Length: 323
Image 1 (cartoon, rainbow, N blue to C red):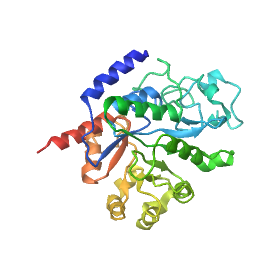
Image 2: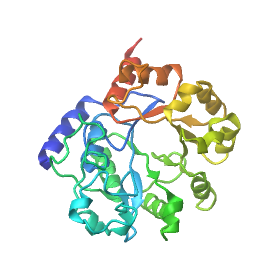
Image 3: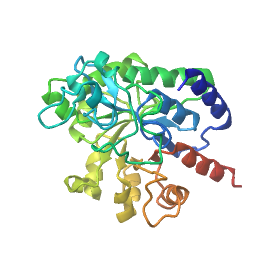
Image 4: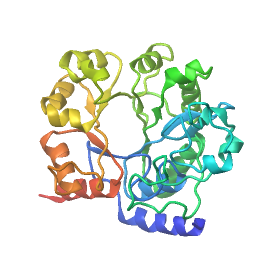
């Protein structure tokens, strides 16, 4: 896709959209993953144009210690690594990002997320093999968002997730230290910085708070997996409140226990559930709008991760316009 097309489209959309969400926020999940391949600069720009308040990059490391934006520690689900480097997979069948230098990863083309047999998870999204997208570095993502903030006058934040920090440490890479160095370099400091740092590993968030003494807002991600059962309970939330500013729970946890949001709010925790998709709706909802309405205004969550940020932004704008 030609750069001029993206810039023109971005300009038009920025003029027409902007969040009126107030305290409730819309987080562009992996960019605007419902419309463009996840974790690409084009996807981040489109999420920005669609009015997202924050944009989420997932972070892993390369062999030469560079933070890149990728949801998995593996490359094969969203790139053509199997074609470009057919002999570089590990014995377990995976191509690990940490086994490749940044220069090598930049040779890859990013496509819509696919299963191992090549079938896309969401067949109606951006067609696989069309156009060409690269794996961006975290600094490229930051510079894009900060640049757009300057050129548009908006103040969109970033919402990075550290992927499997303990695994990276076992491989000899301190992904948390790399994150903090970059954030400091780009001016993300203090409790009011336009950023949330998220992770599933509590030990990593505690380390950020206690070892790095960061005042940045931290979010404890909470999986629906049984291994997170303690975090589904009030006492678990009390523990989280000692080191984090909020939780990012799987939305099913709230569906099963609507009091979960109230418990979190009583402890001063923000609640940003994941993931809301128009093309993967729970059966009880007729539309993404209906699902978002329920979570925003019945369950009273503070923000949502969504592949379709424009739909969430529009919903909040309409609510703001109601007298």
